[in-house]
Image 1 (cartoon, rainbow, N blue to C red):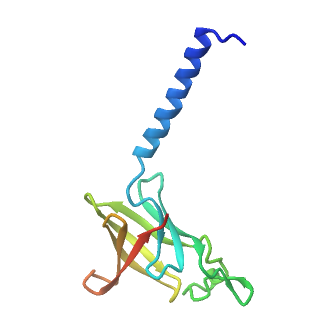
Image 2 (image 1 turned 120 degrees about the vertical axis):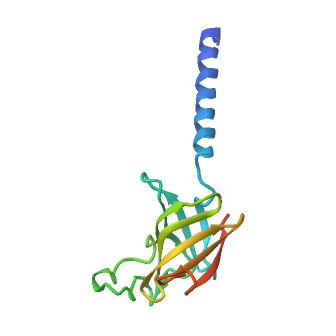
Image 3 (image 1 turned 60 degrees about the vertical axis):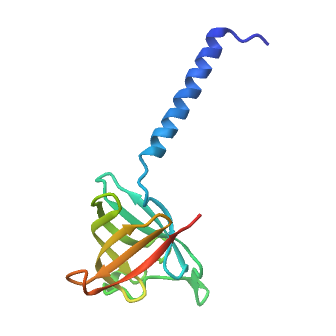
Length: 150
């Protein structure tokens, strides 16, 4: 079958456009976006940036998703109305803004193991994130290290 030069040029132009859009989209992804294991590798958290340029994270995988044969729920939440929501899909990081090259501040972290929410800051360290949850000032807190999930 004969393909004209005009058709070939159109195909190449479409291909180059698709590749450049893909490269641009990849370039706009922030370094903390993506999948991360929590400190004990019992969950994977997907960190994304929302339309307001704030970073949030939700649980997308659990090593043990069931309890007594049923999906785990947020049973320890201080708000009784939220205790029946599933742990899978649970928002655990909210409202972080980039603060310099490797720091993210102004957000909160929710701990489903005790049902409490803490102020939090994140420090990017290549293949790991230092997650510091605290009450009041960061001096009174705890740091855990999350690792990049492949």
